Length: 349
Image (tube, rainbow, N blue to C red):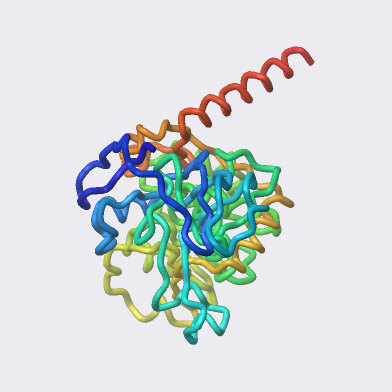
């Protein structure tokens, strides 16, 4: 099979056309990958900001595909089903965190596209218990960003509490999904982008933002909560300064540059600063049900599997509106055929 391989952090991925197709072990599924989202966490892995990835790693943890075969102990009835594989790939189930419903904090957890080979390939294996069924409302390409940008955005949004005005710092893949969740619940959304990113601000307004501006600006109204998706520590005091008394500021990334010193007065008046780590399967169950009811509409740019380095570069440089998604060659053809059929049907109508 084909796979894009990380030989060493800081180097471009290498195309391996002869990578052995993995075999599902006990409790596992073999997935024929249709689409895999390109997440900022992938950048942190590839750029060496997350330590000690697996050797000769295949990145990618926003995977959508169909079950090709099953390992021992897994019903063959799963074969042919469409599933999604998220970042959280396995937990022990026995530690205090797992037993208390906080499996996202499991000390022995293993993560897809980091310690477990991911979806920048034609096939991937995953623990059957950590895969999600994908609602029929979403195409493969549209569903891929939901597996991390959507899930982490949803968990961060929940942690922000019951806010009337919520700020989203960094308007990329996660924020363009989270804004739809927030608006569905009647919240006003204030979007913050890199200074001067007028295209990103226009995108946020098209997605329904009440206000959009530079991240170093203060919004016209005080915020009840803020979620920081951008991996920039300097945004923490900026977000605190933009919030009202009793507000919550959530740091949603797995990696962030150092937070600078800030005056206690920014935290005072019972503001809360907290982080979000990973996800739980319960998050996934809740989110996919909600996503289908809203329904979430993702904005994506498709790349061929072999263009993974180009997709990562575009994400790194802020040249992706919404989310980037890798498609296998056959799946890309299928997506294009579907788009052509829809266009013909529209014209005929």
